[in-house]
Amino acid sequence: MVVGDTQADRVVPPTGFTATLTLFSAAAMAFLAVFALALSLATGRLADRWGDELARSATVRISAPEGQLAAQTQAALKVLQTTTGVARARALDDDEQRALLEPWFGPDLPVDMLPIPQLIEVIEEGSGFDAQGLRLRLAAEVPGAVLDDHTRWRRPLVNAASRLRLLGWVSLVLIGATTAAIITLAANAALAANAQVIGVLRQVGARDAYIVRAFVRRFTLRALAGAGAGMVVGCIAILLLPAAQDAGGFLTGLGFRGLSWIWPLVVPPLAAGVAFWATGAAARRMLKDLP
Image (cartoon, rainbow, N blue to C red; front, side, top):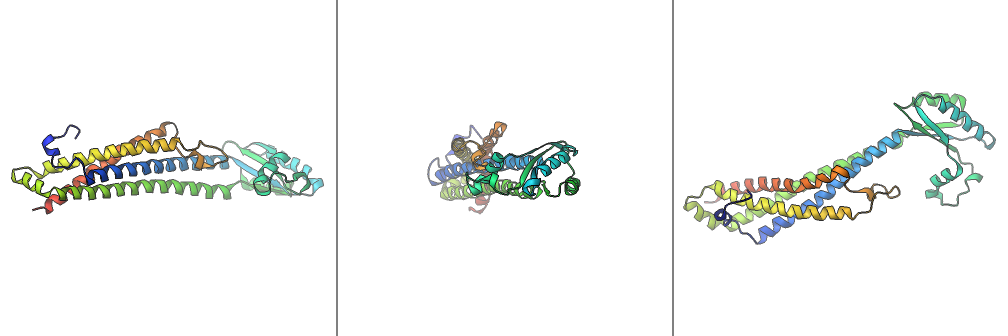
């Protein structure tokens, strides 16, 4: 495959439309595949992070008259401190609650003058706490307390990230199928353009397997070279994206981390494998139809 056969290589034109089409399509598909991989891996990390973070935390909201708010907050904290599965619980101060409301109401919200419920952050440990049991205790001892274990927020977020990751993998499959279709068309065009040369080779005793190997080698190496170039450009584009930031969400963390940088290196060999299979199938089918 690497060394090749000089005589057989003459069967396949080294330049021309089919060569350009194969190189360009392989490069473009590899570029897109790198981004699809980055999307799949980034959304996978996002789903895991959202699931872990939201699964380990909960919120208690206390709504009570101003004179009773502090007492009910202390009562709720005592209940939480004696609850199995709760690592720690703390009441958010005015600055923290103002920061939570700032995206909706602006930075000048007078928290101390508004009847805003008191929020208590609850961090779980081990296997977590019994949410239903804690709700019953809070209802009995702190009438104004409401427990939110983030289940209704966690499930849609994790499901959305998981589906986005699946979409990335489906995109990779479609990219591979498109690459196979384009290379098949290019191989058919090259075979049709060289039908007379192939006919002469057959007359002098050349076997179809010999001709197929020549086309497979040329198109496989072209796909490998094009995909390698597209992969490099895609990785450079990924490196130029903004680094991960809490304020920017996952869109600023779209990329590869650690050993995941190995994944782009798989793209060129896979493209070459697709070209190998597509060209071989197209060549054998075309040769059967030639006189």
